[in-house]
Image 1: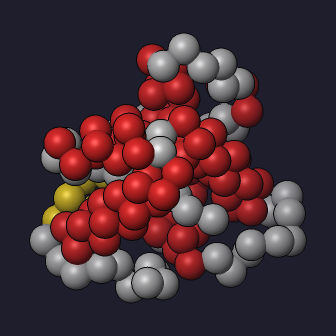
Image 2: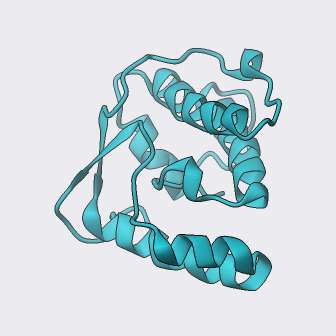
Image 3: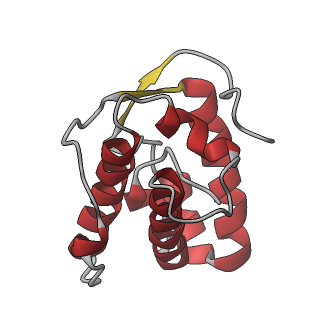
Length: 142
């Protein structure tokens, strides 16, 4: 499971679709609807929120917005409860740098045109997050 802290605009088609699918799985885990992935470290930052389902809902809304802008049709009714708190979660600059490098390597393998686009861009975080100084997040398993 990879719940990118990076803005969804940086993801290629495969990454955006996989991100949507994995965030829906995370939503099911946080709602207690599945027994798999309950201890996945990527969920720690959502569980730490007062409203974990609202936080993952906001995360899904960011993916949905990007998908819609690209002409994809992700089913927004699958988002249970967005809290509407854009920029509410902190993510460290080290985590953003780590994910930027990780995404660059993935794109170089599967989507060279997107890798070129990424090399010309500056990393931005998902609208749910705001960047604070710091190392890679403790929940990341590099």
